[in-house]
Figure (cartoon, rainbow, N blue to C red):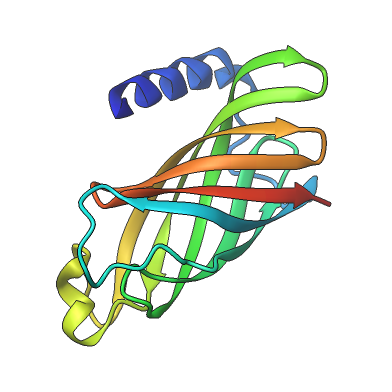
Length: 162
């Protein structure tokens, strides 16, 4: 499945390469506020929680680049921050009001600590790099994503654009 997502993202990126604006402009197009709706661990452990209570804010520019921050409870109920940047890749637009898209973000995670510090790779001093692919839909001002977090699990989010 992830290979298919990567191929789709790559194809979308190729099709839009003429529209890539590098470096990204600091022009604001919209803000997306999201929350977690559902979480599933691929190999659940007794100490895992599926109640992440995520709240995130993303700032998007007109060229589909984004920057954001998210606060959530990690799998071990520890308060965690994700500071990130990324890009959206439109995959299919069946109507003027509906878009299917992929998104890739990368940034830093802070919050896996103490005995849980080694549960994510490269976690030094409580901060670790992360990259999160997702597939989602935008319907008018509403958006929903399925975010895959490594081999650990996935989360469904819902949000609204302003």
